[in-house]
Length: 448
Image (cartoon, rainbow, N blue to C red):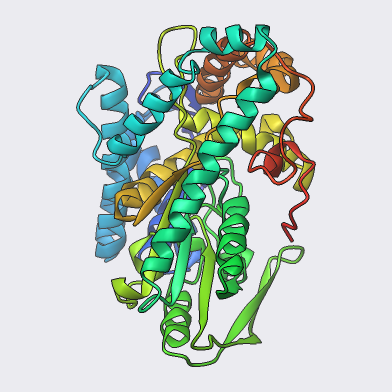
């Protein structure tokens, strides 16, 4: 098949190169969302889409992304894929709504935002003179950085302690505790700290590593860059997870699978696990609140904890620093050390991480039994020292590139904040068991 479509008009109006693989990936993601794993069919359907596009458009005409998505829906329906079509339409509608909201700067309150928790954090920030970058700089200039670290850590530790108390109140019926939240929200450290606090009170735990429930890599959906998408809940065998959780909660033994990240393959029925009557199951997962993750477990048997760095600090433009920007920087630092992933790669990929969060994680945040804020006011002075020059370079390099529009917007926004913050090089005042050590290094905690 000869393809004469070379460019596509995006919703933003930018003209970018046409890539058939993106069509195949979009179809496959919809297939995966309804429980399928047939890549060959997705590829074949994308061939039909391209064939129709070549009939409808001349070599001199650039189709709009909406035109292409219309054809995708037509092909899916004509081939009898009703469920896949519905899922594709949902993805498409959500993307359009996000663009519309951004264009209109809508101010309607977001039901996914924990307003009560935010008010508590804002009140704390104001009372500690940490509610603006300017106020933060003033305190640093007075030599109070170590004091800011101490105050911030106390706020976080109080949150973890309260979560532990709430869990203890429900121990008569509880069988599992789920620690959930978007990428780089501090789940691993918080899980360890929560376990430590409960163990001191005489409670016993077993940890379930959800990574072992990934499907084989070749069955994963891909993002727009062609990278395998580990962020979507459908990358996990949700049916098997739910089945094992139900058995464990009933005191039955299960055989946990084993996933090899080097080969991208999973082996079933490897490690036996059973919960004793006096044990709780600890689960650290992006998707612990996703309904299908534990749909057959009654609410009284699970405690759902949600994490987000709910920092309440205004940047130099008078707008609050975005939590997603905090997590982006955290992941840049962590991935560069532990995953040999360059910070620029994390930045270019973040749009797709964010898209999955908005669809599969954040909408379920208000179903949590308690919310912990892992945001530290002292983060940005450390980041200004580590990454200011990098963000300056990315802003310059990505400007005007339609394929990197999201990376440019994020890098420009973060750069403005970082250059307004007084950089701090010495992080010795940060405790070696701090949630921040999960990202800047130097932790005494065992993350293996």
